[in-house]
Image (cartoon, rainbow, N blue to C red; front, side, top):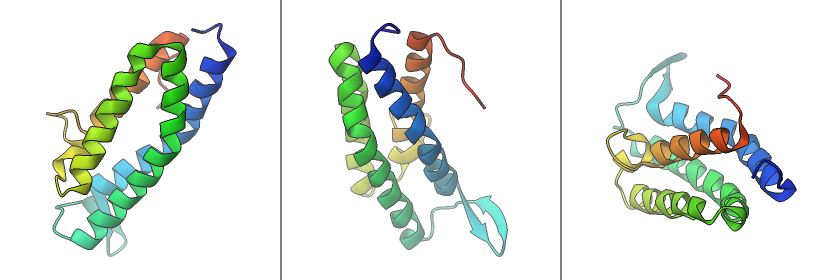
Length: 127
């Protein structure tokens, strides 16, 4: 796949969106309380819903990228399905579907997809 210009363009599109997903997940896991970042206890539904709305925005942006990736490598379509399922559950009130590591949450599936893309492209994760 590294030789496919279309696949590489889609991969670069994913990498461009990745920092936005990281920001959403950071804001999901923590929140600003009197100027300090604290663990989000998920007791403020308004805050959580705003973060989920941002996750929806990220998902809308990444959906065409996922389709382009799967066009060259159809097995990658499973990630789009899993991301969509996790987002649907999160929007339906299942807060654990945003970033819980014990299920196919949005963040968990995104991380797995990113790892697979890095392997395909012969690249290493940048921290």
